Length: 73
Image 1 (tube, rainbow, N blue to C red):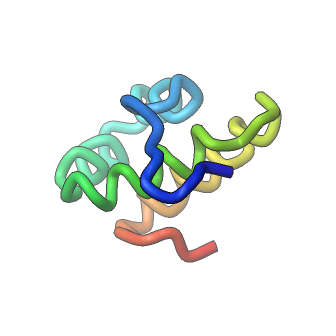
Image 2 (cartoon, rainbow, N blue to C red; image 1 turned 30 degrees about the vertical axis):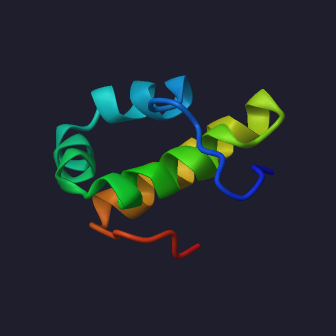
């Protein structure tokens, strides 16, 4: 869990790999404002275990495919 005011730098590798395979989701992700992108990156990248990051990245991809700006799990 990130402390208040902390953020993940850049896009987590797990999410990058999935976005590279889905141009529609990547285009939507890139169209988001910085704060929405940061929300996705923080959620995926803040997981301590690699398995959890991969699961979150897969869920994030589905949300981005559905054009969801915010994290609605």
